[in-house]
Amino acid sequence: MSEFNYKEELSKIPLEPGVYRYFDETGEVIYVGKAKSLRNRVSSYFLKSNQHDRKTKRLVSQIRRIEYTIVLSEWDALLLENQLIKQLQPKFNILLKDDKTYPFICVTDEPFPRVYPTRNLDRKKGTFYGPFANLRSMYTLLDMFKSLYQIRSCQLPLNKENIEAKKFKVCLEYHIGNCKGPCEGLQGEKEYNAEIEQIHHILKGNLSLPQQYFKEKMLEAAEQMAFEKAHSWKTKIEHLSNFQSKATVINPRIGNIDVLTIVSDEEAAYLNFMKIKQGYMVATQTIEVRKKLDESDADILAMMIVEMRATYGTEAKELISNLKPDLEMRLEITVPQIGDKKKLLDMSMKNVMYFRREKAERREVENTATSSKKDRVLIRLKADLQLKTLPRHIECFDNSNIQGTNPVSAMVCFKDGKPSKKDYRHFNIKTVIGPNDFASMNEVVGRRYLRLIAEEQPMPDLIVIDGGKGQLGAACDALKSLGIYGQVPIIGIAKRLEEIYFPEDSLPLYIDKKSESLKLIQQIRDEAHRFAITFHRDQRSKGSLISELENVNGVGKVTAAKLLKHFGSVRGIRESSLETLTELIGLDRAKKVRAYFDAMAQ
Image 1: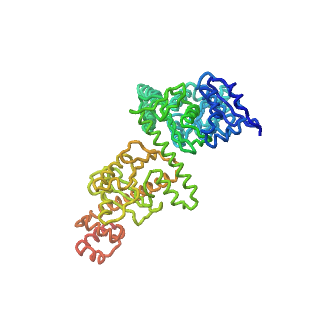
Image 2: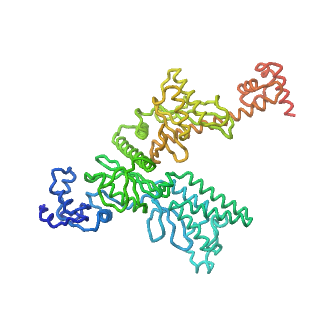
Image 3: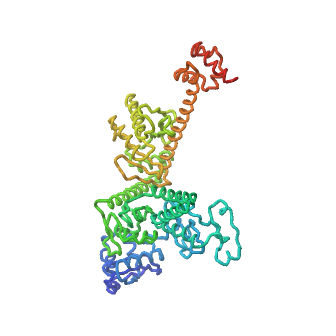
């Protein structure tokens, strides 16, 4: 293996900013880097070899040739480095691959454009929005477009010549009202493109313009006395408002801004990216970057700023982060200390810290060959929720009332990740009048753990509350009144976005949708909901039966309940003998009950 005369090479390298490439003896590029000063940066590899780690020493030992490209600024060097790493894929670089794993929404560039999801990123076909790391949010958007607009789903070439030649016929989508039939010339391009323009605005995060468009159309229809059309436009406004209310709102005054935070360990860096558009979070992704050399957080962050902004097509002029690279960049990078931007930074940091713990725990589980699947899920849940002990005993509470009638609650118990049905409990609400979820939750949690304390029973390892911050707060108040708050971990799970809430923390945690631990929490929550609904249905049914028996003169609620408990149904009472009834409720009442049912049978 020939030696490399680095001293002669270093003297030729300029001091300007640029990108350098290292080649091995086969002529293959093994590393690409950027530098504020090319000579100073390249020299550090050879003149400070005693300060390098094992991986960097291995890289230096394989260098046989150096090439460099001078650029105008550090930002240009960063962009060129990004492109060369993708193109050459050097073995000592962090590999940046074009992300085709996540889908995009494409709005085609053709007459009567189509809107569809795709993983094939061909920019020539149209405008692409995404990528969507969360598939649910993408399909929510597509479903909303279907309810708001009448966009074709066919792939017919609808150019002017084909339409005028009447080559096509309308399909079922036209007959069920999902399309206006542009294939037969029943809808003009101007009208169709107006709706496509609204879709572009929504995908860009500009919801105000479609709202204004619908409002104008509604008022226009109302002025023409076309009230059915006006109501149709009003329904569309409500659909859009409903979607807007479910979007994660940051603060409209923040405007357009990117967030990218980073934490790392010896093996990898973990980053969370959030794209904020006019105060709405329109995209978010958390990623792991495996280290090849001992790359600094600042270097990885700078590289990923370019990568994520290119991937998500963002042009925001400000980026929030937990650290600021020592690099001249064509955007403002801030590390906020107070205010709404600090809350945004905290939210991103919370997600990236969770992601790192989740990855570490996954590796720990994978490395433990003896771990059963049951324990693996519980170990993951312990890490996800930062619990001190393994949650082998979990209890979950849910309320149920329909139209304010028969408010009840239910508690289900899971032990070692499996339902323990003998420990399930039902609760009739005693101290709350009318439907009040918060007060009901406070009552049943208090009753449950007051009993456990009185009977000296062990407390659960985790309490799960089916609901958001309000229900969680009510449950925490109950634990405080019993003096056990802080002794038992408690969380709330909100149905809408599967957000996990912790006491005294306004920022929710979003667990990876594919995580086994989230699936366990969802299973427990769904079981509590099923158990509560079943009990509520039974209570309503029992209530109606008691009401029917109260029609019998001389029979009150106590007697009616006694009869139902013994016979199980009104039919059982109807078919019973006078002697059986007499033994249960006495001769006088028995005769009245028998006479009532005999009269109904005639």
